[in-house]
Length: 111
Image (cartoon, rainbow, N blue to C red):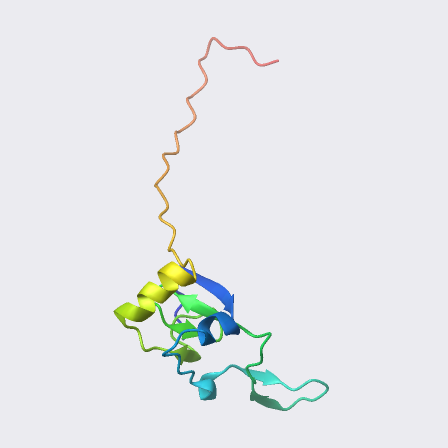
């Protein structure tokens, strides 16, 4: 079963291809139905394709953390490229406190 991470961000493929050490594993693309056909075939990555940068800095062809991995050569240099060039930042959500509703007093009259 596919593992959904907590965060990923989509980028156009040319942003990844601009990284000097980019090596894409295009054999791991998603399988899609060909237009006008019922046959399934691996997706061809074109200039208008989007890929997903995952929280663990791997790149996938889809939102799942562990499926269709296109790039997994995670180095400090790659992380720096993602952070500084792509502006990748995993959001930190502050916990919020939800207050309980106070019970109505018996003296209050509802109108």
